[in-house]
Length: 614
Image (cartoon, rainbow, N blue to C red; front, side):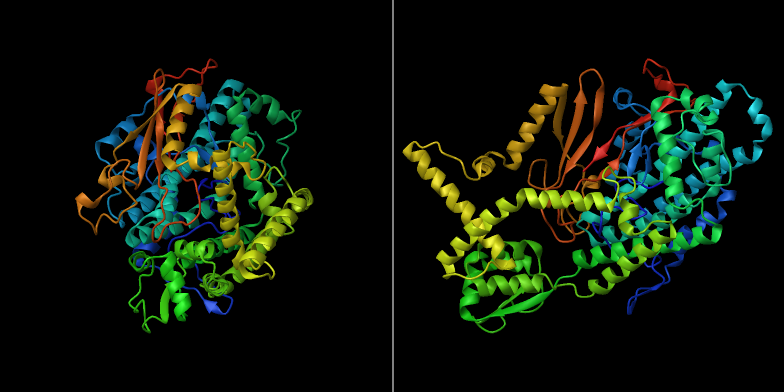
């Protein structure tokens, strides 16, 4: 049911694209031959035990509106908005205004220190439990006399139920989305650890939400008018009574959310017995931990190795100057341990890719490739265990395999269709592959005298061939030739620098949508690209200075629309691939559940928050 989009907590999700330190309270089972354990701190256990006492949570009516001003409802990694996007762009939020008074990391109130993440997780759990109590009380108070209520009252009750379920997701997403980004990109190890601990606590809590039968029964009884215990679903049958009486009178966005939510509940095993649901929850907790551990090993661990021989050392020096190498190879070992015949390198991604792309020495390329691709041997056990637990979890939920489960709600549908698609792609591109390989083989014959193309050859000869083609174009330009049949895209690469691309983006949003994209200064409290506890203020990059950058979007009629952060440069501890993170989604919360058909909303009855992405 409730899985924040950027973290997607049932882990069918972004493969292994997670990082950060695994909180010590998540994994409590043996992983292959290595035991990844453990006992969390008392503070962590306190947060994790909170869901067991949710019946005693404070009443929902006592919650502050700011605690509910987060993201729109999410299921299986998708946002389910209760209002149209066009409406959400036209309001301003009191909670957003509040956030601007005191800059904080990710606009989360009181997030000023790494330890604050645990308090935010605990508060989010308490607030969610209050909403769960409201739904449980409503479920207990309902009886057969509800069927005699007017249809307008039933529709109103259905809207209120969906809004409450939406609120649960909003509260969790506000914290866990920010925690995922922080553990993936923050320059400070302390911040990454705090965020990762928070992420683990809320991941386990979301497993509890997904297995909460009372949330599921509230959806079936008040929205579908169907609270049978057979686990079956007639939600796609337009002739069913529930569909025609309540669902059909809900706005389209409510209907989509209700259908998707029920499918996800049932897909994730809500129909199972309590014992089976608990088993599935425990398996999911192990899977979450293994994924974090796998990526954490890649991000946090570095392998150091020596290359020997005067020629190899000179080749490295020719490509990477020693002062740059010293920044990339951070080790207490001497960088030249044996005079000029030995040099210490590391598995650093930037260093390895640079050497592979620019060294004509096949011996050096092979050494760098093999060392960088065997840098984390302990991940083999983690990966084996992850594959095994994903299969056990998917089988328990009724799927043939993990692939069947993860594709069940995707457009492609089944592993068979994926295989068919890949086969078509291979057949359609095979002639291009053969042509490219022939070009590489010819280049290798010219440089090295021949031989097969090895994996460590591909980056070097790709760069070499592109450079030769670009040089040829320059010569043709001087000679007046306009023939650009080969690799046409490379002739435009020089025009798409970072600054040119950002300027082009500003022009596009202005010309197409009338939106102004304006760069803004970033307060020190909002920065995650520097370890602000370890540097002086004058060392912090300014707007446009090559570090993090912040852009605000504004429309002349609709007002402010949201914020986008750019963090485009590599650094230690940062996720190494291109990525997009949702920090906070835009949302309009209609507290009285009364939607106008014309799309207008009373500002006094809506709590609107602006989206933030990175």
